[in-house]
Length: 353
Image (tube, rainbow, N blue to C red; front, side, top):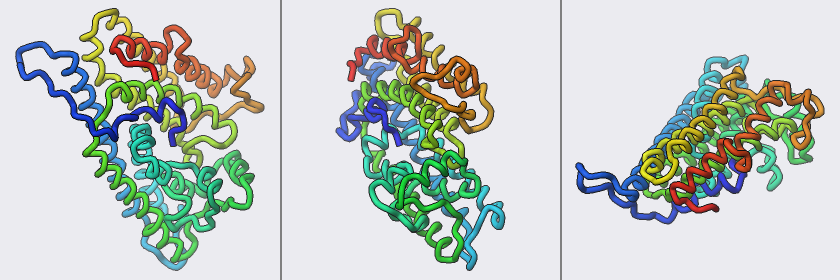
């Protein structure tokens, strides 16, 4: 669930149901600034809707792949094909969600919690002894916790087992009742919540400044995603999928920015140089992520401190990733991705938050 204030502003004005300005009626004439803005907003709207459609589809496919209940439940060892299919659909859902989490966090606040809150956030509010019933602890991470219950990293187990009496160890369904509850309770809840997002978003309109600022927010959040790995609190911690989450965030940020490029080039000033600086920043992050294999963050060095890492720690794959993410997300560093995005916002006339 997005926690950075700037990210939560991604679609701050979506719920206002604003009328979008139409593009130029003269097909042979140049587009106006209002035309460019409207087109950017329409493209971003379509991007979000496409991902919400994919999210809902993946949730339904995950539920369909769950084994039918039998007396001894199911497990990765006994039902390998079904579990593999569920894991594949979970990853598809996760990628779609990471593309649109900012919109969901602002417009669908309750659905954002029920769909994407972490286990510790749920049990901090209320204990939940039933892992499968679709009440209490719910959403993508509740399902993830079950699907990968036989391979959860020790650091994650250590963190969660220290949460107090509300903690319940992750497990596969061990009885017919638990298997039934997983398929018709927990999975059904995710299907219902994602279908509601998919449907309700269609009638909403975007606010261009908030959408553009949300790209900056998604860049800033990358630091948090890396930093939390040191304590076992990272986002997709059971599946070890947080690096894939970060890749999806940056991919969505790039696609959103590209929707604004024609509007940027219509402005006076050094648009070409600013645009190149933004694209270079995205490329640097892409290269840093591509240099790492798989979907998981690299191992965290022993005695790691995000506030004061040692030179030796910064030479590790994790330290190198942290350094790159930290520098690109610092808008006070000249030439960083965040700084270049701020310059682009200024050319577009988008005010600071």
